[in-house]
Image (cartoon, rainbow, N blue to C red; front, side):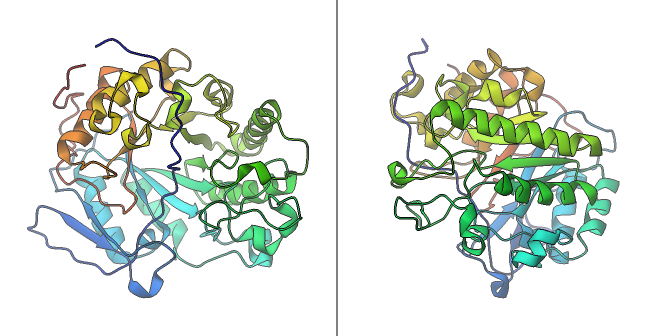
Length: 392
């Protein structure tokens, strides 16, 4: 199929996923493993269950690729949930855990950060975190700390001087009522980097910065920053943050990665959020474009309905990325959720195959409810880069 020009439409759907509340149910002979968080621990997220994969024989050989799933702070803090997740890492191709230590509501899930403790933004959700990290590492699991950077509904309320403002001086909020830290404010940088440094010190292998961008929804014309705003200055600022991250984290032997909009792999402008994949990738070890087919507008890549073409969307997005950034730095987030079109085993496997057909063997799965398709994952004994192939 001939690839056509990317639609100028940039969907308003913004990646803003957070996870889970409920209770636990685990049946050893079941074809799935269900994780739910304790009702009393429920955050602003909707209460939902987490279905993970079936169990297959363990393989001890170390693998070089990264294939992971996101784990919320509350799930990571439960002994029951930890045991169930351990089965996945022991017996499937999964070898990476992306654990939230700061989400967009702004709570911070690791202690030992002075500014966090004095500001009252710490939330005790993951007890014995250092021990849990050690246990995962004994299993050969690569551990990533996910930090939502500038979308922060807590520190902005504690210290309004760090927030994006309205013209009248009040705190600006997006269409979901969430405030943002001012990306131009170096104190906002330092706050997030102190959290990142603490995560590195307690044993995380990598820091993954999410929402490393400017606001994209709501009345962004009203956004007032601490310095004059332009596309050039926005990009320069985000790159500056990543340079500072390198300076403060590389000495600790910690890798740095970023999450970016999926469209950054193809778009040549900053899409109004300051993100340009080439310039930002230079300063990180890995970049994870969120190439969710549901987030592409009609006509993107010449596809009438991109959401119904998961293989083609991911294939074209990664092919464009590989023309611009090193293959070894590319590690996409893939869609394992339904939004406007039902996604299941075939749709998820099609995206994984699109990675392999671009010679990209690392990927991460995301579901806004943390419900992962049970039969998508292979066992540890199967290292082949093959799934059912979709024709372009």
